Image (tube, rainbow, N blue to C red; front, side, top):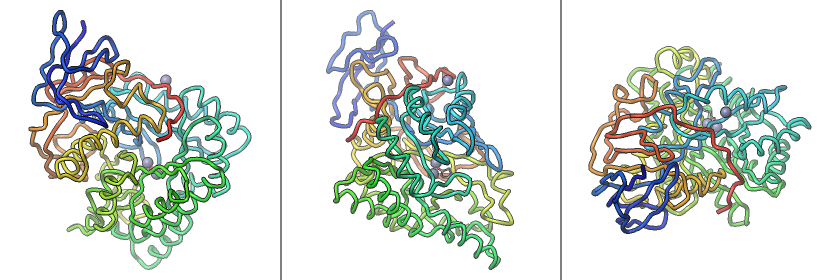
Length: 458
Ligand code: URP
Ligand code: ZN
Ligand code: ZN
Ligand code: ZN
């Protein structure tokens, strides 16, 4: 049976208006001021906001390093949908000497059949050679149209020449390259020096990765993109200095996209000054949390369009056990924090409700822009006839508190513990199926792999 979502305040990137949405099968059939209820199931959305399903284009589920992430695709995507996120893009990694097609297959095995939201994969290359150059168009044909390169982490990082070569090859396929911009070699030297001086606690993690290690890497990355004549996406940008590099490049006509994450908007390096020495491990991620000034400059950059998307970089490790691997040496603390469950509520509460961004801008940052950049638009990210019926009915009156003991994500803490939230996803549809109702998951494992197309420039 068709469903009409009746009388909600529909929020798109351009407007807010009271209206109805008709769902037929997996798709949105119509959006208008008034749609007949006759012969249809009716969902009363009066007093609620209606958003397009949110997209988190930056997750790491079921990732193995020194230990495995606390969330896999089962728990991570359940956490996504309870918060209103209906599509995630995760990172498959091509290990050195291994085919990227093999890596893609491995990530399908991790995700297929157990995911509760739709999903796709970026491919991270850790090297570049003829074989990979041949595989790249094959990946694009399989719906993998976005790629990531690392400038930090010994086992992942590539040099500037490789950056430029991959960006040029990706451009030919119509895809987009994302880059983790931190100067790996300089950071490794800093770490060795700090450890030698006996500085082993988590508070030295940010000391080893100062803002200049991000800004300098962004500068090099932008130069590589210029040589390649290709667009580039700076992922998880965290500093004011980094934003300035991007603004300079744009003034010179370069196409540079920017992602930031809730943690860089809402937390800062005071989190490392904890009562117990090791508690700061909860906030060990890379890039690290920055200064309050950096937070402020990122909020401004959201408002003035310097930042284009907000992903979480959800990479969860339990404090007990996992993070404790680094109890004697901060450089052995697994890097990453959780966030996939709380991103929409955080941006709604601390962005839209505090007047820092409009609701339309929130939709742009969490839905429309990631959909365009990553080849999902207009299938995903928008409320219009013909799009997938991925819809979030949001109760703006719901006041709640973020607490680890209440969360769905499978990790023993949240970096946002005790923070208040002002709104919440009440009902969520994924391709026309109600998967969350009354704040509870009612249908799981309905997620599908999404075959993505070319990146749409904006
Ligand atoms: O600390 C982080 N961010 N871990 C995840 C991997 C990455 O660099 O995105
Ligand atoms: Zn698959
Ligand atoms: Zn990264
Ligand atoms: Zn990441």
